[in-house]
Image (cartoon, rainbow, N blue to C red; front, side, top):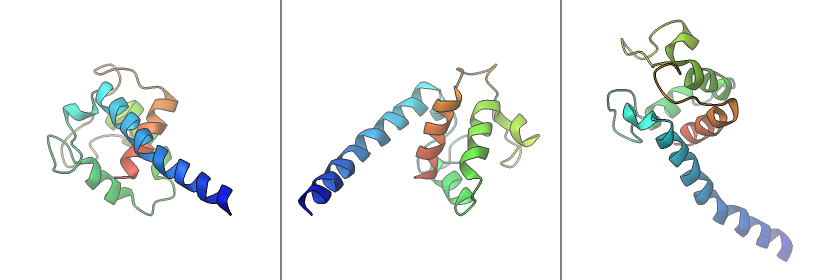
Length: 108
């Protein structure tokens, strides 16, 4: 019982650090150039994106593709007329990095 409690506390206390690291990764990959966490900017907020994908079992995989390929992953604009640039116009994002960012976005 004590071990389970200790593990629960350890895991819970590490979650904010992981979230901060993933937010930093999103900053490093220039996601914040167009997106913000809550209000919409030049692009939809991460919170709005999270709400849009809520309940979709393929959300993480689709976001990973969009993060890596931009609007080309969805064959064109996916939020009104705005297009998300591909990796020719911004820093390269690996599959693993895109997965981290997608999980962070979905947790907003």
